[in-house]
Image (cartoon, rainbow, N blue to C red; front, side, top):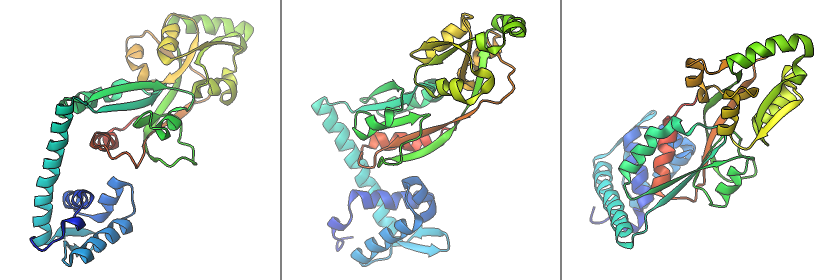
Length: 299
């Protein structure tokens, strides 16, 4: 490797080589990096041309490192670890603990990834995490403004924003109430109809819109407006009325018979959950989270 110009072997190139080595294909690497396989192939070809060597042997969709490529990747991995250790050392010396801010929409249950929070803090013991609940669809603007590093949201990202997004799964939405309220509701609805029932909704949320516009049999006049999901569920549990919530947020309450699903004519549907980040954020801590969030399936 003595004749190779290190200016051509940037950290990004070494990270790319090691990722291709790990995945064994350009297409899988492209998926990980949210690029096209042709872009990855072109990048590798450009590096090979600059260095004047072959880094990979291509066999259809499968790629393997050449002997020289293996040497570069192995030494590059050592360099990447050294850089990572140096950054950690500088952070300790400067007492500048990295701060990662994750903005989540009101409907997302943070307990879904509580184990990953522990894994992250074990992996980066000096890092600090801020989990911030955001509603009204403002999370994407805050991401663009770099007020948060990662978004997990039930609101899709506006098309005019230059951020990377990825679907994580879906929330099944259900209508629920206490068993006592449902019993009283069945008796009362025979006389007054659905319009006189109470529905507890989060202000300016997807659930509020569903009650207003989407489900005819849920067009209830008496809407109790609250500011967050925790308050909404507390009021539903106290017997104040119905509520539309993600199924996974009340599973324990259903199992304990504290709440029951309302038998309504229409299925309410699903809410897609998205995650997003900005490409210009090169933090290794953000990259760690991006890889983890790819493994989380919401359903």
